[in-house]
Image (cartoon, rainbow, N blue to C red; front, side, top):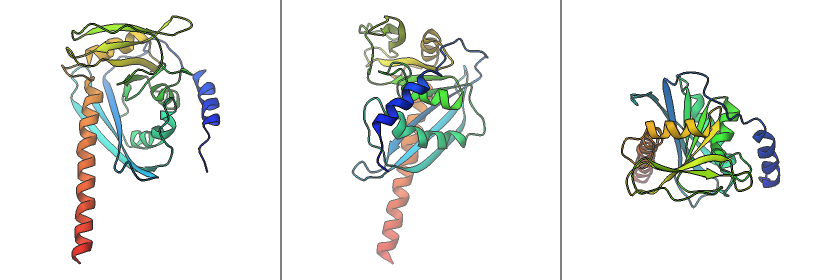
Length: 235
């Protein structure tokens, strides 16, 4: 069945009404990060790999890692990333034995044209507080933060001028990341958490460690596939 962006847009408008920007209701003891990558960008459907890592907070020690592999058929279109990646990420998330108190998602929260980026979408579906951490801006008005680590500037909604997120530089002279609440957390708390989980790199640790873990998994899968091909050719 062909993917309908019209229906997807309507779904976003409905789910947006369920987003709650409210202070965290419990102490954070664990924080998760996730990431998703693909094996062969020239195939359709494409094989995707989604990974989650869970860390203690505030120590940021890894306590669990999981991943899931599945076929992805929906193409990438800005503003509809969740429909492409979220089904696979949810499958990986369900494998976790220890559900985190909050999750960093590689993408936008409410800094989205319809207020429902992948982090907000994830937070609404799971009911777990979520934070969007995107590498590129998508929606909103902001000034470039200063070049020092820890500098940030608010991202404002173009119409209401409300703060919907922050452009944050976590490492000196690196490109900023775009932090926004997904669900069940405020923009200020999302910013505070990003700064507290920074360890001198461009990305917050939950996102960075998830990315590194995913790359290791990807290399392992590719190596196994190559070995299988070599075995078939040699037989």
